[in-house]
Length: 266
Image (cartoon, rainbow, N blue to C red; front, side):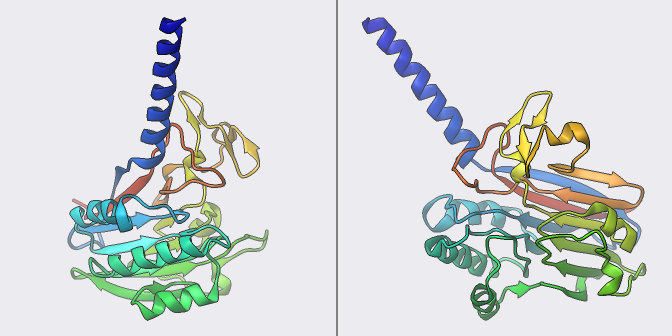
């Protein structure tokens, strides 16, 4: 009996270790995109779906990992806290404020952090709230056309042409919480950065995401869930994000800081 209890304890400790590693340790995912309009390498850090989590005291572990990437831009694509979580909202605000010391920060909301008071607080600490905004910005001598949309639902008639005129002169980046790759391509977006899916939150070997947005085995049916997708000159990157919802558990898809390298085409 004593040996069985020891084996049982080892199994429990192992399961806790697997849960902790998959849910609370951060990986760096690097993506490389080349284009002739890029003059010099640009590093964009994307974070998403924090859901009020803390990685280290005051998120110092997370902040330091981002700092080590030496980003030129930081983009947050929503759900930085969970609905009605005031403490999580304070955590998200403090994190994004700290990140403004490292690089310009651009934010679009998700379904959880869609809150006018939060937008105002972010603006007051220097975060660019990019909800249906667009601007040509200069980064290391390269002009980037940055678009932001905060749609929480895409109707069958969704079309970015209703809001903006497309421009092919500069490399274009769209930041959005939810992906709509076809509509983004139709508008001519070069790169879309999105979140929302948590990478499936539970991923199985050889299968991928187990369940996402009401769909079982979504990747088997062609649903965009996780990583980089490219069709012709258009790219979509969906980050698996940092936090978990509704329960704090991940498996096979660790919390992620995405580093997008824009490089000159040689």
